[in-house]
Length: 238
Image (tube, rainbow, N blue to C red):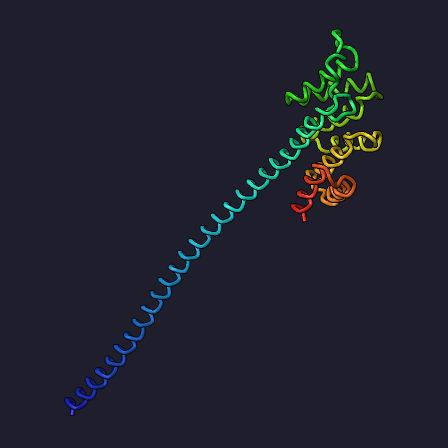
């Protein structure tokens, strides 16, 4: 009787043991599944980190390209200015009087004492031509102070505006160009002053004013190099 009970007990324990093993197996599968999930999550994190690094690299590349674009834009604006500058010399050969385009006085008009208007103007222009804009600016200001209304005045204001432009003082450049436009409407420096005034507004980020002035250049001086440059800039800022 006792043996039968023991055997029954053993069978019960064996059944419990089998059930326990089955549960252990299920737990093991669950643990394995968790390990796999953790491994997948780790892989996902690694992939996300890699993607993040790629995005950071792309952002740095875009930032560099943006900086390169800004530098290129500044170079283009400088090139536009140089085109205008060279233009003055090309138009000059035809006529060397002050109203002829370059604003350079005839050499035989320059006096030795360096105090007459021709000498002062020529000295200021020479400083500008050599790229010494601060000295040129001071020289043109001194010239205009001593000789405010002469045949050189329109040119002097224009070159004074150019000095400010190359010094990146665009607000003051705009004011000097405006003096050429308003006070000397017959001067052949007007289309150049308008063009550079428009470019100055663009440099200040004022596209509305810049566009409006460039459109005036195209409308009022259609067959000039200034109009060609203005058209190019208008296409660029659309």
